[in-house]
Image: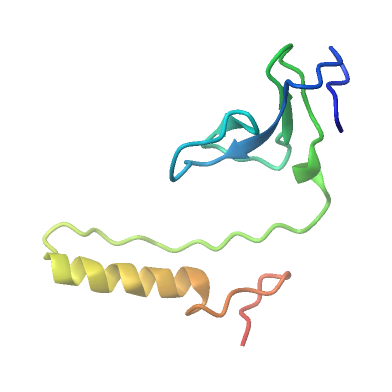
Length: 107
């Protein structure tokens, strides 16, 4: 899409970024969408008229969520916290191997 379907602006369309940016965002290309992500978020926004659209996140793909129960870090020293973080990261990333599309661990 090269122009806004509502106001026809050719310079106002921005791709919407969700989550917390890890650095400055090029506001000529992107618009911040917030930290909360759902299954029906718009992916484009016009900064001239406020239009949002192209809901590509609303596809019918199966979404897989991996949940890890967190333990209290109260009373842990820095070394214990580092080890705990590595253990959690291993659980979330399947020890760096990733996950298949159906949610099963890759081997």
